[in-house]
Image 1: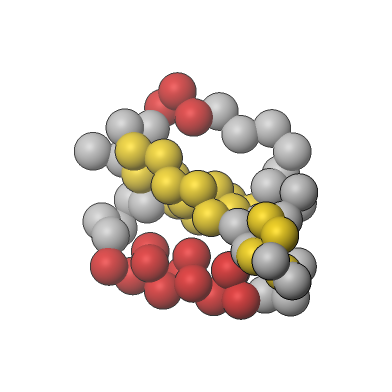
Image 2: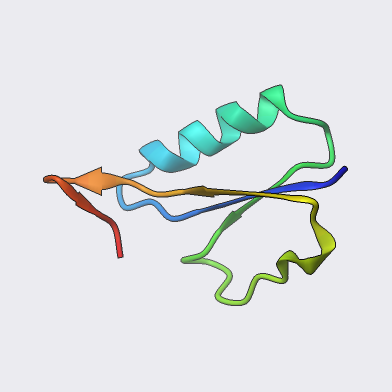
Length: 61
């Protein structure tokens, strides 16, 4: 089963969390920052995990 962690971060805390989460998941788990890669094909993955930050009470765009 292949997993992907799709996230966006402003100050880096979500990226650190995504990397920490990856360490608990199977080796073929792929973390992807959508600020660096605009197009992500999720069809090849069985599990999709979304991550984003909350800043001043609002979810990141």
